[in-house]
Image 1 (cartoon, rainbow, N blue to C red):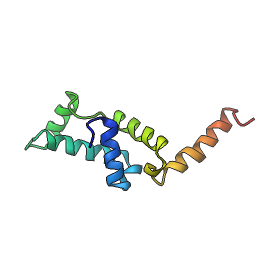
Image 2: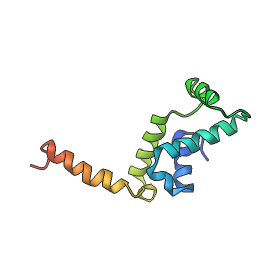
Image 3: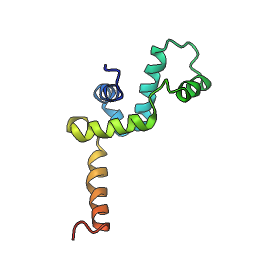
Length: 101
């Protein structure tokens, strides 16, 4: 697994396809492995919050952006919700903004 955010996200999307539609679970898996690799015995909420605040854990927005970019570039990493999010919602917004005129 690569150490970059994109590499971490790609690893988990390939390992567990169910994470392709669930950013909260995706973040949790990435953070869990990062905490494990830091060899911390105490995995309580205070430890997590300190690590996150110190920038030692990948930020949730970075994980979500990397997931979105990977799914845009790699159709095989898309979840079941991808087409409904991109297709239907995108078409509605285009119509509201007058792009389909």
